[in-house]
Length: 338
Picture (cartoon, rainbow, N blue to C red):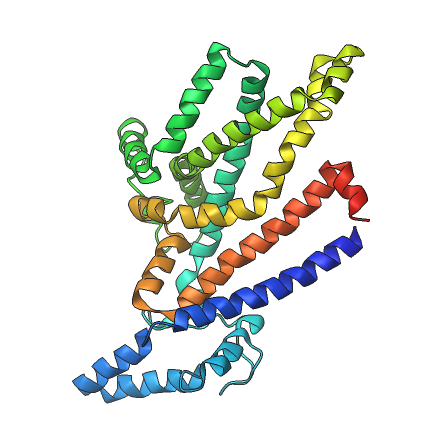
């Protein structure tokens, strides 16, 4: 197991390095950038002090150097005017649009993004797995038909529309403020018990909206996988030998039907982040989705690059988790990993 983890960590590092190169060079493809355009505006307006500050930032982040040198400085593999100072050293760059370090701009947005999407991930699995088991073991029943219809509805309804509906009724029935992840009175204040309670109360609607589509898809896929496993000879033999029905279901068919979903953990986390951008805009959620959209629109390269690397980091971390869980879950994979 230790050897497997070490191999995966090396693969993760190489993958992130390749992704960082692709992200940086793709962001640099469009002509111009936010800072260059801003300097032109400042020079045209004659603001000497602002121009001097912008030119200092250009030298600091190597924007006057070749693109490949800019990339190495951004990652932290090449010294700049202040020495080695890049992603590897914890310097996420400067947001030219907000005129602040990227670390200050993203701030709480990073961990709030993780909280929202982990809550949606837990919701997907906690709700989808029992429903899928019931649907597979009660095939062609009224409950199975109801679950099937609700699954199709969940896949068909756009997330932003569901967000608007739930926001309206959450405010009308429970008095929750419209949008956000906590009441307006807690904005800019330190985290305490009252602010955490407000966060938990506001977290219900985003969790439902973001997780509903994934829940519906997981129910349909797991139902099909479980039905396939229940029809295999080893399950029929287990029942014929008198194995209790619950154990005959959970011992092997259920575990085998989980494999595709465990393998998808690495894809599900970044999918939830990227798929919730529109929902975050509609619900005014302080997550990284709206920040990424704004950074790409304004060509704020360091902000966009860091957020994309954050999503990439979630992906490779999720892949590591899914690999380890698969090794624990499936003895065939465990034997092959030795």
